[in-house]
Image (tube, rainbow, N blue to C red; front, side, top):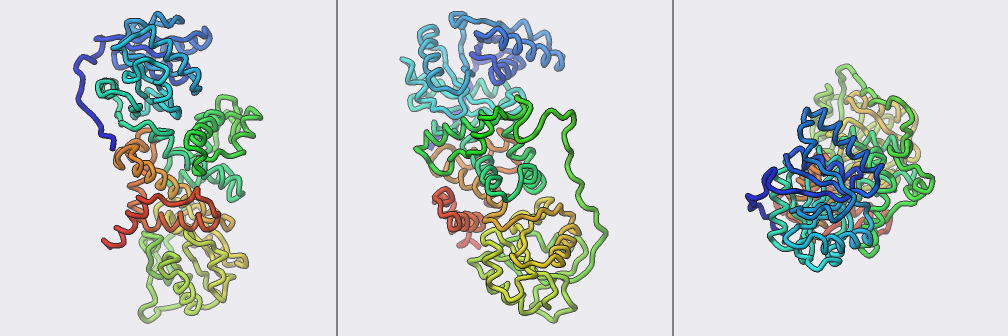
Length: 529
């Protein structure tokens, strides 16, 4: 298991040594600016005059906005690798091409001998493979910043197969000196953040490809329902459709075609059309518009009243609370019925007796009363086979209805328009924005968040980093609302495994197999309950 080392090296202080950055593109110029803002003298290498000019303009403008133009003299621009001699640490930030990086590091190895530390900002390529081009691989490590480098606080410090302790110590100390939070990770495909984040994009693309929802709907559900700052397609456009595809292809190849990382043809077709996102003016969204659409307004409903028959269960935590807050009376049917219910809700899992709950509700409720069923570990079509009056059956997201600001609903194959209208009115009375979805395993948020938690559990199981460090990395590196593993614990490991098993059964793919560690936690959860 990798251990974080936090012993500071006191010699790394502003102005005590020169740092260099190779490559002045978006990441390279952002890293150079970050180092400058911390007070370090920086040499920025770039062979393209146009890219060098853009980088200088970007750095000048940013320093002016920060009222730190006096830092600009600490920046030196160069186009010859020999001019990097005298650097203490050199950070490479050239395009993600293994051959190019190996050629560069072989040259740096000759021009800048030890004790100079050579660091790569690669996000997906193996540090060990890059270091193999040098005669001193022990002084090579990953130092992975996130875009925008001056803003996002996380830096992944990647330990290659032969990286030595002093190199890791130096990079940890440097990261702390420039105001970043470093997390040490082993040299596995995607490290922590880019690996664990794969399902955020991959599952969203599959959901889109299956016609469950369009990209705008998926983004809104993810933002409003899950609390993410950006939806997956907004984020892909920001990163670059081509860059995101290349990262997925690299992960897929390095993992020997692990199905969890399989790229999607939608991205490849977009790259072929040069629809690359913000940088090309159009990706999933059209950026030629001067203004971007705002968030839809959530319904503002008066205080409601009425009776709801709600069965207890291990899904839909908090639904009873939000129903009562909206003004409804809730009872579980164990005592004398105080009146005709407006609707009935079944909220246990399939394995915990959902079939019996639906059978009982269908028998107890008059045929004109809507019946809601959590359907994150079951399809509504399957549930419809368990009741006599399937025309009043509606499924809902059993993990995120109470927590988020949206209600994802799915009607049975025979649901009536009247029932749809009644359920939609009920969801709006809870302050939810309603999305009707076709019958689909895992719906949207349970599928995406469940797969994020699963990938994080695989990473923890394989010793990429400690669980708390994985959660910290995802929050700091990508602004996730919660760490995936902490989120899984909050939702319930049992529920996450149930969603994954449902997906695996429906699709018949190893892509959805649950990590052993996640199953272990689910069993312990059951024992401790």
